[in-house]
Image (cartoon, rainbow, N blue to C red; front, side, top):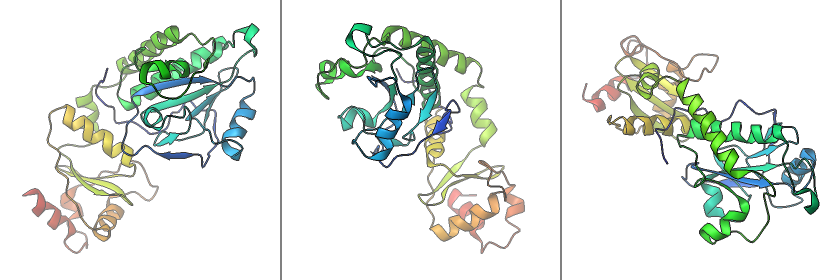
Length: 287
């Protein structure tokens, strides 16, 4: 089920808008490896989003899918949404609440064709960026959770959602993303060569490598780079330094516009006044 983890952005580019909520928790180190689908049992995205952001109910989802396929971010991927009532499943799932195109038992609680396509597209995007393949073993509806794992509760959710079709379509879309993306070796080579991690929870991380220094602002990206290296059989050496040292090197390695990855030539940087920080790094690397 697992495939090589991508050096991913932590947020999908597919969202129409973002609606932050405090109704979320830490994933406590768990990574997203599942897609968990729910229906809203109503026809209103705004009503659903308001419920998640106002505190009227202690419930949330990573994403809300509107009645015509609009995609709204509520809980960022780094955090666990309060969706199914099972912290263990929600911790490793990307959860979606999908607005029905019609309501009531007589209607079968359907999803519009636009919705179904958006659900599959977002699932594919999440899986691609988080490095897992999609099958019906890890793309599931709320009502399947009690029977599979004995968690959550008995429910008809997600109504008439065609889960088998969505699972197949999401995996097809994920494979298309993979086909249009450079290989893992190419990705890693484009980022940096022979990196060594210097990690700080507050300041992101730096990678010192043969060609220079790169600043990584997102710890989610740090994790994906580490996973890539491990899957490619490359060594990963963490070098821990104090925050002051990391901040000093970080400022030298980071462009003024705060770009995501910044390269600098280590020999040139070593000529700057840094209190010998890079020399200490080099010593730790055995250079």
